[in-house]
Length: 312
Image (cartoon, rainbow, N blue to C red; front, side, top):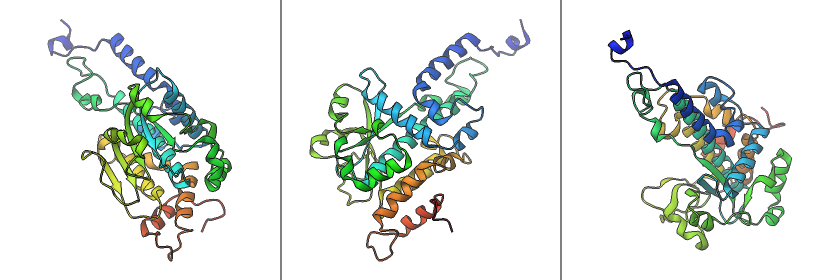
């Protein structure tokens, strides 16, 4: 018997390991390119990769394709409110991208763990958390008809000025959330910039797992729902705060303390301009005389990279 066998250590089945990796990599293929997950060897480096315009638009195209594919994976629908104003649109896009990106990075990090050196299994040793880590395909949902976007002049201008591929955004006339749910392809719902769905979507409350909002709390969401409702001027402020916090600790805190860098990549590109613009519009340029403006709006707007022409 070999020394390893004598010690009770079984060598992993390398073919099985390879097949396992291929299956998982296939599941990540639709979205990993947007976040450079496959381009480096270190998850820390991946986490710091900037989300540039190309990555943002690739995410929007892929998330739309997945949402509209009748045979696609179940998705997390990140729903903005019915007003579909600048704050709602930007917050939904940003948080959906963050959820998908964080899921990719955490999934990739867990995928790097070797199999159990004794049994060769993927469910033991350092992989005990791997089964908790799943890919989440989050889709931003703008709750107005596509043809009505020009009526939201500030939102239409900002998206065009940045270069966002508006054709790849999912609007209300592209996708029926109720039909998506009926097809079994709605994993869960995240409510952004509101905490109760409109009457036509009220049944989706049972699928709601996350609420981020700055309006009056109607407390109709499920008790187990993760809720962040704060009296700030812009929902984008809460999005910046929550996404930064969640990015630093990994999914459900799974990566532990000291895992940093993810948030730096998140705010290094067009998302920073989008979030800052939403905050500035909602608070009338952080006007202290505006009753909606709060210190949190000021803090998070100034934590983002300065907009061109606004340095100093």
